[in-house]
Length: 405
Image (cartoon, rainbow, N blue to C red; front, side, top):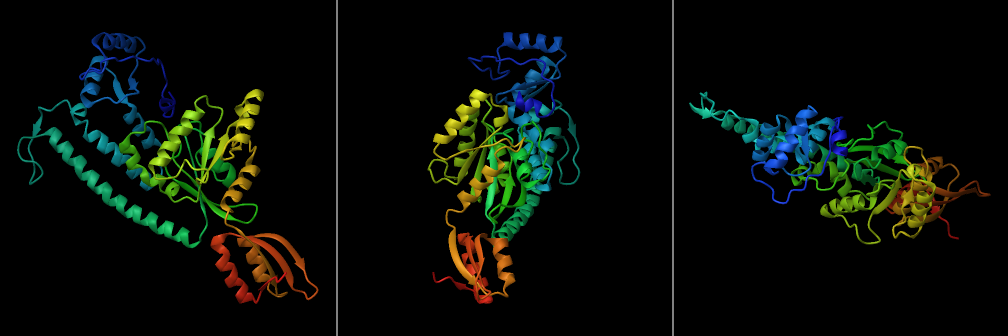
């Protein structure tokens, strides 16, 4: 139902239909088709959604029997993707997946297979069937989209190379759809990314620079929500939206801890991550669980969640992205996970080298700073492992030295 509500459909009826022996022509048996036909007519239903793969033949026959549009799970997800994609790449990916899906269903889309029309030049000889022309047009458009995507992918790779030169660690937000990822992203960054109680609210990765309290700068990436049983063709078509996850230094796995299926949803997300080649099993996996929506828990359930988090192997952080509760603890946890390889360095800075002091406050965490009798400055700083060489270069330029004590 969540998928249907994501595109503002009004749900008139919902029921579970056991199918012991799927019929190749209609999926359901004759009696069930007739019973549903009466229900559809009585409520003047114009769209029927079947949460199961439906073949082109089955879809065509059911539409004829019920006099209503029929969508299976893949078709519905494509409709949602089409509404949510906002960047050029996202729209191209949507169209590519949609065309691939439609190509296999021309038998349903076109019922006038007997219609013939003459061709022009090399584009179809005299008497070529309508469906053949339609298939050719789809193939040509698919080729054109793939060429455009190649250009976009190269551009994205250039952007990634630019980010590697910074270099700031990438923290990617992932989670089951409607877990509150975009709301969390907005809360941390202050950005106004589209956030709504809908599935697939985000299709295009959105990235923002965030400076943590200790001075560490990160790139926070919001990604598309995962669902169970996502069609393979869609995973492939939207793999680019998950590239930031593959390259992330840390993954924030946001869970709707108030949802009754939270554990099952978490397993679905981990299955997708594992399929991308990401370690999700070991205690040292680059994953930090964020248990969101604690504001929706009852007092008793809240205590149970806190106890569970206390004994959980990866030390999840309880937050409410909607109210802001737990945000400080989350940012500290992110800094701690990214700071495993940090170094503590004592140095003495010449009195006139304010430029180096400014660099330390910008690029590191100044733990202690004291003036010396000579006018020089003694500082103790925490620096990320990947910035150590840059710090040493800055020290050489400024004539700063390591504190011998």
